[in-house]
Length: 384
Image (tube, rainbow, N blue to C red; front, side, top):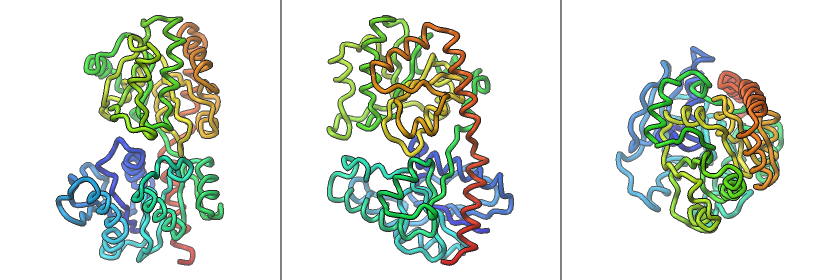
């Protein structure tokens, strides 16, 4: 079997699509040693390294691309013209676009991974003429795919509703924490990571997303109660590069912290390298996940796999993915109560740690790869 894989997000490991691509590709080749894959990438990105045997890289397009609108237009050109042309040229049997950006026409059977339909569920994510046009384009192209893959039953229901597609044309393949997220493996780096980001001895972790859907404001509001009870002894550490305020999509979270008068209890550590995330999770007393909508929601599972309890909003997707492994709460006030309880009750902390570890082991990239290969085989065996 020869698969052509769209590698647009390969050089963006901090995005959900980039993480999905980087973890899926090696997992596929571990499951199927005879698999041949052509990773089609834009020529302006650095050449991918460390690929498994059986993967060849095919760069296409210009070596340099301007920013702004031209960069957006180039992405569309890559998806709609350069990728299908490269698929035909490399002789693949099947094409897989591992994000919501499939071509309208493909020379071979096409599988598309739609990780979520956030721009349809939340119109604020498709404001502006170009964004609305692009959402319409990828919605149409997704309907023309031979099969869709998504990453949760919640996302599948949304795809059925918003794209008006039958359920038998969509397969759920759950994501999983990477093996580096572990309570013990890699602990020798913890001290260096603590020093690098100036982390306190004890802290509660949040962040990794600042758009309005992530609701970081809930974590900050919760900390008004936590800091009253605990002082600043266990601060809220917020990881990730905070973008400039851009309402309504990106609220001014720093100003919100100032308005709540919790600045002394909050530490902003900025961008975190991927290699440092396991230690960051592992050393935290607990991880707070405030997102109200995800296709899957990998950060809390990464924290659980690292041996760190999780407090998360009680949403449909969190109930599906995290289950009893996390402390699910309906609002910021109850979130504060859960945080305080985990900080002051060691038996509860230990119980949630163990439940989180057990929940995280239910997911593996081996399962994801096996289910993805089954989709490939189904599509190749069926009619165009």
